[in-house]
Length: 119
Image (cartoon, rainbow, N blue to C red):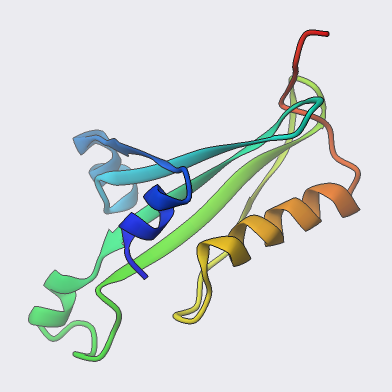
């Protein structure tokens, strides 16, 4: 998997040197998840470029070129953050797997909207 797979699925790329000091990466991909009622949540995906670590021998040569750390902040009710949730992706997981995981969690826990659309 590559960062382009997320971009093709509607994620927007944010690059900042300030991310690098906080998360050891300069790239964050983000997508807003909506339904007809409103904004449910945002999925943030931190992108880690493993090429340097592979070249220096810190990672095995057969490691993937990129690693991804998806996370969201859920709301118990509008405008009230409840908790952050992150998952680590395996090599065989897809963008769709990540989105499905967070959508199922949101639905099963009966969580609130980030913001409702005006009606």
